[in-house]
Length: 200
Image (cartoon, one colour):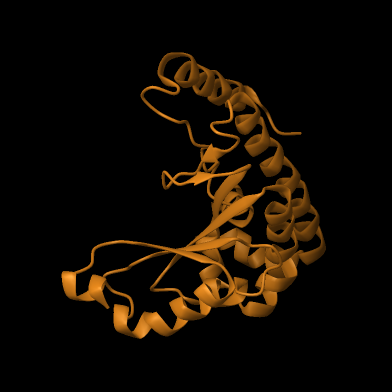
């Protein structure tokens, strides 16, 4: 059973922000809570051990990921319950208002596993995250477009965000994938661009 002392402190901070700054000076947004269910598991194990567990103890890891998913959802829901709705909705971490509950999640460490492992171990929990919240944004990187590719057909996913990596593919090379994302859902692009790239 996870210790919830830090969650109590987080909710205390959310209430502090709401009491002192809402709505005149800010709209609070949910904290990302160690990013995502897989990333949270990696942070608990350490990357080396996590990747080995995928092969050495797959059944135990699947069970742990289900438990982490439930805890992750509880933590995120607790935050939104502490926040007043604004015009019937909430703001996400990008400052975008959503007419319902929202979450921003990521799975950066998934770049080191195969599509089959992603589908088997992480996708069930991610699908549960997606169905629990009205509006969801999955954070990805242009340098690792595989995650966006794998999530294109995720049932109910509303938005994919792509952070432009300076060492990743060019923006011109990324546009075809971005257009495919836009065929299915909303797209947020963050990062430095030139005026010419912005016009494109």
